[in-house]
Length: 130
Image 1: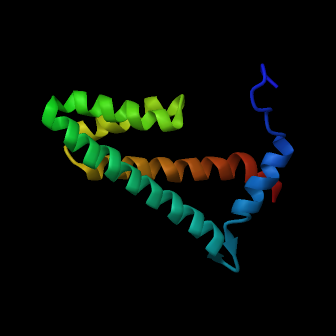
Image 2: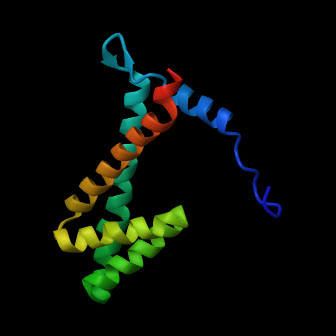
């Protein structure tokens, strides 16, 4: 423990939990329903989050200032939900929104990030356990 903070999780237990969630993503030659349901949930969450913060929130703050200001404000507010790494990621997605000129750009970037995270979890924690 660190100064009364939550204890670090046991890595073996964490790997067992990840393995139980993802299992092997293929069952009988097809992607398992469980794996696809997690992927669908994460992608829908990403789309909804982007619509709320970089769609509605960005448009609201953009009326009161510049594109950059709106991207920074919505990036910081959204990033506070995923502190500390979320702020940097959220600011990056705000930059993608401004540079791309469309909400679809940040949605696509977020979706790619979710897929990359799932692949990373699979490669690091699950693949060698099977």
